[in-house]
Every structure is written in C-alpha cells, then in structure tokens.
Length: 122
Length: 108
Image (cartoon, rainbow over all chains, first blue to last red):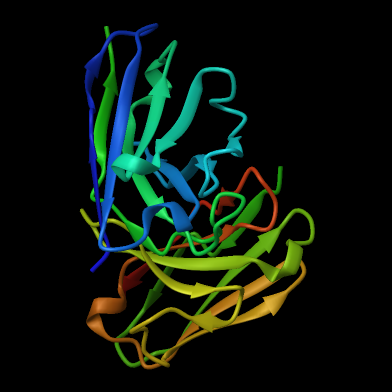
C-alpha cells in the first residue's frame, strides 16, 4: 500500500522559512515524479511545485517561484519543500502527492498524504 | 499558465440523479492530460479520472470522464449519498500544472 507522510508544518512569522518533508513507502520511490499541492482554509486546491523521479527537473507555480524549492533524497524516500520568505497568503494545508510518470511532475496525483498545516502569521 | 474554469460552482441534486460537471481550459490541454478528483470534508482528495476519460483504480463505472482539447466533463450517474462532495479538475499537460476552482455537489 502506498503511503505518504508529510511533516514540518507549523506557525511561522512572515518572512520566515520552513522545510516540509514527505516520506513515501509501499512503492519504488524514485520511479515517480511528485507534486506539492496546497489548500488554504476553506479554499480550493492549488498546485505548488513538482519534481521528476530523478530530481533533475523541478517546476513551480508562479505564486511561489523564487521563494520555494522542492528537492528529493531518493536514498531516504523523502521529498522536501523548502519555503522561504513566507507570506500570510502561504497559509495552507500542504499535501505531497505521488504521480504516475517518472518525468515532469509525474502527471496526475495518484496518492496523497494527509497534509501538514503551515500557518504564516505575526 | 493554463486556467481551468469549472461550472457550476454549486450543483444541488438528489440521490439517484445524474450530475454533469464542466471544466473548461483557457488553452488546449496537451494529450488531454486532464484529471478529476473528489474531496470530502476533512479528507485528502481522491483521484477519479485521469487523461480525461480513464477511471482510476476502484472507481465505480458510475463516474465517467469525457472531452478533449479545452472542454471536459465529469458525469456521475445514479448519485449516492457518498458522492456529495467537492470535485476538482486538474490539467497536467503543461507545467505549471493547475486546478480548477472546484464544483460543490450538494444534496437538494
């Protein structure tokens, strides 16, 4: 069974930094691209970032480009999202997701974690 | 960036009815790489349909995806109580990937 477990969320002041982690299990981690998707309280889904299976290719939404960096350590079955210069509007539940493809960001999200909450507030 | 517009915003129907949800893209979706997800309150989304018309594993055949290019539809036949949720479309043909704003399917 595919499982994804996010961690690293919390309360942070505007301008601060936070690193989220997502550990995958139950499948060959480095065979699949991954995505980060967020959901602000009471709002819809927003695709944030994606990474290929090898980690060589990364992609970002315009709203986070230049502030967020996604990476992966395939030896640890772990995906990361480094979030810098956080803004109040970055407050959301952050999900990691497993794709179907190796390349790009893996395509559609086939499996989801339960999310980790990031709150940006002074 | 491709913008996806879902309609209607809210759909009020009764169990046993048929639901028709629309997702329109601002430009053609490459390879019809369009997915549909269901999200129940307090839960992570669940993949229903990928590549416009392919059902994901364990999704009943009451759920049907159709369309191509810029216009896509999710049809849910014989609505059951568990189907009343929020539905999102997502394009994954071009990065950055993008979601529609969602359609809430509520009990009439």
